[in-house]
Length: 151
Image 1: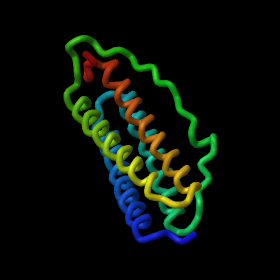
Image 2: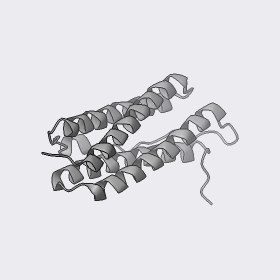
Image 3: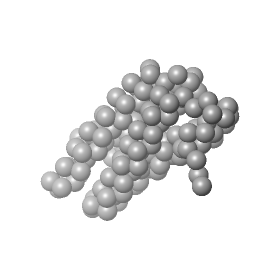
């Protein structure tokens, strides 16, 4: 598989973004006060590592297998936060990661349209879907804790 210069550049950008996500999730897991949030961040760091591995495989000329086993999503049930008892540090960590996930998902959306190979598009679409799932899980956590109000 021969990548164009533009495809290679997009993959290198994605690689950098995934590396940053891994660092953020691991660092924020250590900083989070709530145990549920620590676990959520740890789980997302592991998925981001899978994304990085997939990007590296594409850069080395391979098409990663992103079958059904990697797309399992879990429905989180969060314990409700007490009204008025928002942990501001955890809220700030969540807000930063939610913003990061929005950006990363948007970057994958652009990349998907720039690749010629259908199989690579499928891999990137799979990664984007998981990034959106991460955002949904962070949103759900924030909403359950009173950190994100939907009006």
